[in-house]
Image 1 (cartoon, protein in one colour):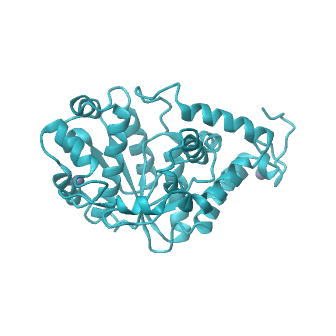
Image 2 (cartoon, protein in one colour; image 1 turned 180 degrees about the vertical axis):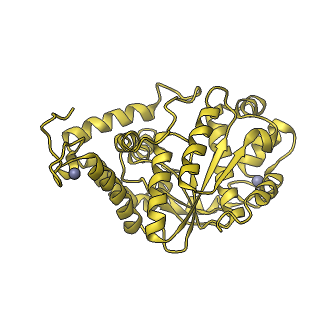
Length: 328
Ligand SMILES: [Zn+2]
Ligand SMILES: [Zn+2]
């Protein structure tokens, strides 16, 4: 906690935040500006967006993705790129409704185009039903469905990239986890921007250097209508959560460790994964034409096992009819 005497390093008003790694105390106004500038610098440093780009923002309705939306909207005006929001309604009772409400409320306020894809409308089943019928854990099905719909929606709408709200802490947790498990297969993806491949659009992470604690304070200070609740399927005792806690302790003792870690990761990640083995396993799905590691993509496999037929093609057509002219 900051003492009431702590003053902003820029304007001497009452400080609401201490940024240890930058040796700054900030008032409300300068804090908001600081975080926005940090995202702007990330975009420029890693070349995440250019004038004229069409960026599809994947927004769940939690603090991180609403921060992403709020900041990317502001920067889109200034840096001259377009943004639209994609929200995926998973149909999880007592959870998805509130998230949807959060997203609708903030997109409306900003006047950003919103595409909501509801699993119930698209597949006739909710995420819990899909998980049950395909006999796969909900979090694994959720990952498959979200990745697929984000990619399909970006391709059908003509977006140049999909932006997700992954924070510095998320990326670090995945990276450390891959060291702990000695599984480096996904390490090359932990970069601020992944390249577009055949059947897959480029993914960007504008919050790559923003800490989770920072998105929380940003959301609170800007009164973003984010949903506080946790997904009922979330594993409370996961490795990621422990790694995040551990790394927060490290950061407190050695401020800026997170940023240095991420900058080096961004530099080395692509060379850390055996590129050859990765390249060989990339192809496109025989059913829907999007990226796959096998003759069928994971989404076509999951839907086939749950409802009897692979639905990638149908889903792409459905999305295509929904996203016409969202950028105008
Ligand atoms: Zn100030
Ligand atoms: Zn497919």
